[in-house]
Image: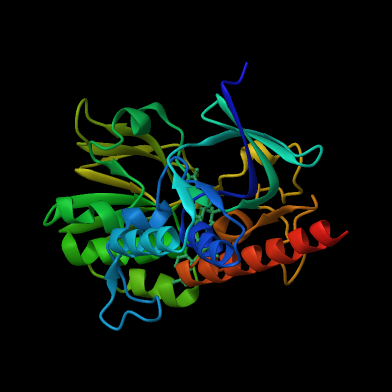
Length: 314
Ligand code: NDP
C-alpha cells in the first residue's frame, strides 16, 4: 500500500540538461512542474570535467557547476525539484500514476521523460568487482588518477577513440581493446588513434578477465580468431562501449526502438501516449549533446503546455 498520494500538473522525470530546461520552461508557463532527479542528480554532465562546447560560456565551465546552475535557474523560476527515483509508472489511463521510491504515488496530468542514458558495461564479474578500483566508464572523469601509468580502454567507436586520445596525453601507454578487426569510429577519430605513438591497438580481442584482487593490475585478452590469450599490465581499465537509455520502466507503454530509445513523433517530443513527452538522450541516440538535450527539453515543455491547454479547453 502506498503511503502518500499527490496530484501534479506536470511531472518531469530526470535531471540532466533536458529535464532542467523542461523545468525552466514549464515553471515559466505556470505549469508548476515537479521534478524527480533520479539516480544521478544532474545527469551525465556531473561526471564530466570541463564543458567547452555549450554556447554562452566563452571560457568553458565545469560540468557539475553547469548542472548546478541549471538547477538554480529552475528553482528560482518556481520548479519543485526533489530527490527521488520514479520506480514505476502506469500510463494505461489518464491521469498517469507514477510511483516514487516504491512508496509515494504521484498522479500526473502530464509527464515529461528526461531520464537520459547510462554507460554500458562488459558484464564480466571482475569488472564489477573492481569498479571504482581501477575500472571506470569515464576517462575524462578518472583518467587524471592514472597519470604516467599504463591503462586499457575497450571499444572502437567515437567515444572510445576520443577517450583513448585523451588518456594518451595523460598516461604512459594506452592499450585499446577492439573486438573486431576494424573500428566503428569515424575515419578522422580512427586516424587520430592510429597516429598516436603511445596507443597500441589490439584488434580481434575480447576482455577475458580484468586482473587484480583489490586494484586493477592487468587484463587478460582473448584473441577472437585463434582463441589465444595474452596479458597486459595496466592499472586503469576504461570501458567505452556505448550507452543504454534509461527507459526500462516505460517499456510496457511507450514505443521504443530495439535499443530502448523512445520514439518521438518527428520534429516534436510527442510519444505514442498522449500526455507523455520525451526529451534528451532517452530519445536521442544520434546527437547526445548537452545543448541538443536542452533544446529538446524546451520542446517537451512547450508541447506539454500546448497539450495541457487543449485538454483544459476541451
Ligand atoms: P558506439 O555504439 O558508436 O560504439 C560502441 C563501440 O563499442 C563499438 O565499437 C562496439 O564494437 C564496441 N562494443 C560494444 N559492446 C562491446 C563489448 N561487449 N565488448 C567490446 N566492445 C564492445 O558508441 P559510442 O559511445 O562510441 O558513440 C555513440 C554515438 O555518439 C555515435 O553515433 C558516435 O558517432 C557519437 N559520438 C561522436 C563523437 C564525436 O563526433 N566527437 C564523440 C563520441 C561519440 P563493434 O564495433 O564491434 O560493434
